[in-house]
Image (cartoon, rainbow, N blue to C red; front, side):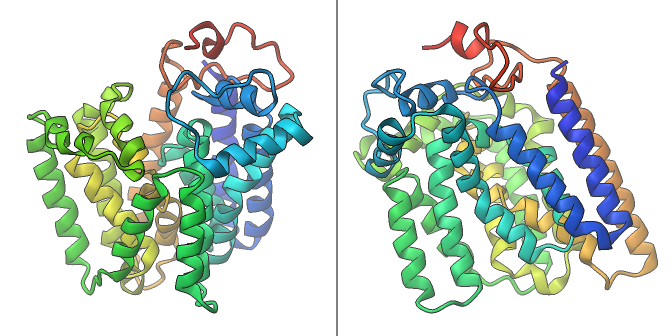
Length: 379
């Protein structure tokens, strides 16, 4: 059993319960949750999470190359690394700065747009595929830049679209998938959703079609992508070819996202269904349903599904439900949390040390981690 993960979850469950039971304590519980998450991610050993060991050694000057990949690093990420290599090659500083940058927009958005903020932090670890924030540093850094552009728009600040496009362009120089993320976000912004039945129908239809498509080799449908030599989709080609995440083909895993989305859009306040956050998340669920048999689909839609940490807590803010519906909602939320808690514990109890994610076992930076799989099975 990987105890640090288990302990983290139960602390967040306790804090989220305290927030729900005593809403006036939200500021305190959220602050505690943020500090605990910061320590857990920033102070982890540099071997926890695939590729962490690579970018840590490269940024701190232990070695002069990122990994064996023949592709060049994006220029902004190269500059980011060069700064640490030249001026601050201290591992704990590098890990801490990474954590601050990637979580700052999320913290800001939870604090400003969610009443039950601690519940959003819990959702990040319980429902969202949080391992991506341990693994995909370049992609997450890129996403964090785009999220500040999203904030600029939803707060209706001056030159909002110019700033959004400018930040998206900067993000592209950090990781080229920013181009795809930006397009999807804009599409979500422009598509109007007037009635609740629209997202519910879209989720159900896409899930059924996705299950049918799963009987075929979906990768063949993406064969044309490899024929285009475009940097914006170069990373996506790698995700399509990667076979690390084939466990996502299990039917129960495929349907989890749809069940959560159906719960959200069935009980979400009517006025929030057409909000940008909700529509970005909805597109992510639909894309996941259609292409669930693509091995690394989670990496392709990670920006969309991140918004579950905002829309899921909104369910607790629906004050327009009848007493019977509110009781039903709370019962369903309890079942969902119980189910995902069980899944979380199982995944952190029975795990494969050779798994490409390299999430186990968890070590803090001050522990002896020389025998970690990231080192033993490094490429």
